[in-house]
Image 1: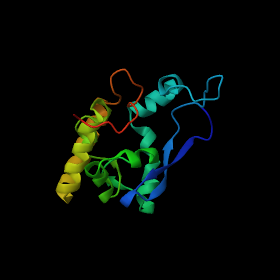
Image 2: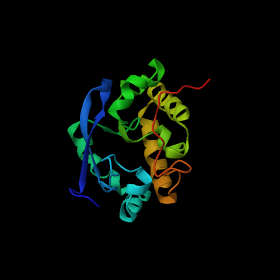
Image 3: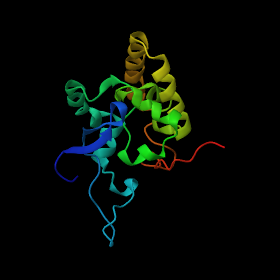
Length: 167
């Protein structure tokens, strides 16, 4: 894998305000002849695949929790480039701090479509309680041990969000 071992990326946090999220690097920096990054499936290393399958790549995010940028539970922080693509309803995911795990993660993770993921994130924002967070943490452990929903069908992770909405 490329170095450094920690991957840093700006992600939208509470109210869409950017923060620097940390993860363990799982992909190399391979590019094509024009200098464009190869697809995730071609850059994901075997060790990186194991890190993702065990969710160990998320451990550095505990630093983001300690700093107050993230919570243990909340909608996963997505890419900054997605911000202008959200509907008003989808953007509600930023009404709470992003989390290491969340309602969408225990209800399908990357194996569900974007619309389902956003609906689950919005449901969480509207219904969050201490007890729901405990339930999500407990079910996350189960999900990680079973290694369920790690990637979308035919994808190394998840297809890019394009802003398409259900018809």
